[in-house]
Amino acid sequence: MNARTRLSDVTETGLGRIRRDLASRDAGFGPSGTPRRRYRTIWISDIHLGTRGCNDRLLIDFLDHVDSEKLYLVGDIIDGWRMKKRFYWPERHNAIVRRVMQRAKRGTRVIYIPGNHDEMFRQFAGMNFGGVEIRKQATHITADGRKLLIVHGDEYDAVVLAHRWLAFLGDWAYRTLMQLNIAVNGCRRLLGMNYWSLSAHAKHKVKSAVSVISRFEETLAAEAKRRGADGIVCGHIHTAEIKQFDGCTYYNDGDWVEGCNALVEHFDGRMELLHWPSEIAARDTASAELRAVA
Ligand SMILES: [Mn+2]
Image (cartoon, rainbow, N blue to C red; front, side, top):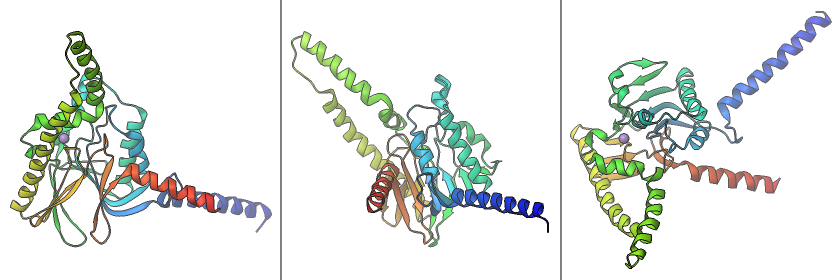
């Protein structure tokens, strides 16, 4: 063996090592340096790509810190309704689509169940795009043998208008409400009337929204039971929840507009709701403590 080949061997090995390091980093660690968490299944929904309301940065952080054998996209992933009105598509939204496609390519089973905001994809149910399977509904069997029905949820939503109002609440309604409150009370003052709180009025409306939510939850749990499932996973109402309804579990994986939640299944079948902003806060605290020790 001459010096030249030896040198190239060394270089090869070096490159190989770098490549291996990069690959393991990719597979094992998130950008924050913490190990990527592995789950059996992840459910996310109501991302509303194509709108300003979408918390794209938090979602990218989430996708970069978790892995799973299966990923369910439970509807309202892309907001076709609002994109029709005004086209909004920043690079970060591409980054999200790219990450999902990469996952499918690397062997994660990705199942996409379109919702009402991305209903234009429902016509492709049964098809497969780059490893992403499109379904109208799905059935999932947990590691501990429970049968879960997976639906977006709008098909059981009798009060669509109320939910639309809920979905848009986080986006701009609150700010508008506050501005309106100032304007309304300015007028009232001019007319010699006393202060009237629009937000108190809104709170009353929220109370009726709460009853709408519980009716939705009951309806979905009843549907799961009727179809012989042990539980149901849905999204749609932007309210993350795990709730028992006699013999049937209702799971709502939340949203990425207000809550930033994901529903996950551990390898033993245990289910957990993640609130990603809290997970990031915990991660930051842990790394600050580590730094303090070092
Ligand atoms: Mn929806």
